[in-house]
Image 1 (spheres, helix red, strand yellow):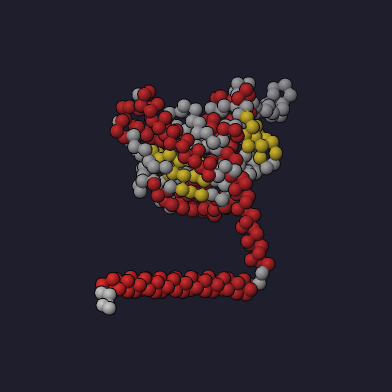
Image 2 (cartoon, rainbow, N blue to C red):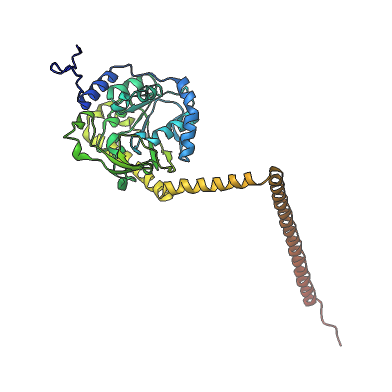
Length: 372
């Protein structure tokens, strides 16, 4: 007979707890764990996987040279793509490529992420930790740079129609953190991630009945991916959309001083400044690449066609064709050079002829007419 506390005293059967309560219990346990578990060796082993992710999304990192040479710094990014957050993986790929494994980066993530078995452990070893002001302060005290997504779950599940909009939902905690620590603030703008999965609705009406607000969840999002419709919290195969992430020029708010962290006017000024520059960049990227999925698929088709052509032609023929092309280019270049030389010579001859004519005319004028 079952003696567990979860057993029904009348039937002896195990009770199935409320999923929300079970989730709350697991999240609570995870928040008690050691925050800093970043493992450089784990990150090094993850690079091949990140390379595949970057290749799938034809990822492009821009502006990494604008980052300060040394940390710590606060990196502030928009958030897209539902629960898989492909832009996060792409940025980690770009950071490791540009900064290596010895430049620490702490990522402030959503509490529920760390309650997912194996996923939470991998996130911790990659440098992530549950988001809080205390976690950010401690990371800076350790000399680590910090990456934040102020829009969080609200922006992550914004409707697809708002995909080209920066929406931090008036959250300003990251500004207080930057002002208190006096660190440079680097805006990051990601484009294309919200085309990897179509967000139909945030499902805000479901937040209250299911008690989702306890976990800072705005609702029960409904999405559409390659596998069809589904809940936004459940992973799905993403569309192959081109993802571009651009780092902008760092913002210096140190002149405001740590005391201004509690000044509403300063917070609003900083909020408008960073969201304005990020929105301008996102507008530019969305104009440059209006259809990220079509852009990625088009590149894939071109690459596949080139690979198929190279595979169908014997290597000796392919090498000969390349050699012939090089020779043709060299030959055309030589011909062009000869034409230039010929034109120059012709121009010189023309100039000399013109000079002779002028001199003859001048001589005729000076010579007196013969007397009769």
